[in-house]
Length: 96
Image (cartoon, rainbow, N blue to C red; front, side, top):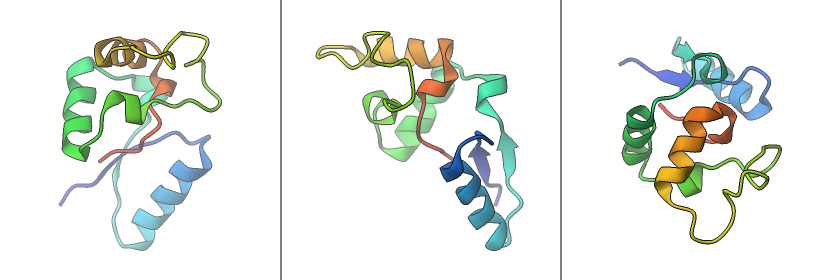
């Protein structure tokens, strides 16, 4: 089984997840999403597999989401996905 972590080395939670995976005997494929970015189809597939929406994966704290108008009522999933592609740090959920 291949395990993939979409990793932000500056994020304590991401580092803890990586440590837990390694402690469980896995050496995951590490994708530093802040460097490589996302594609919209990739995000859609990851969110579908996780059973979440882009709204649910949107990083609110310590992000430009509010300033970008992404936290207002009526913002579409497509708009959030486009913003995540443009600004990868808006995605808050480590997915595999």
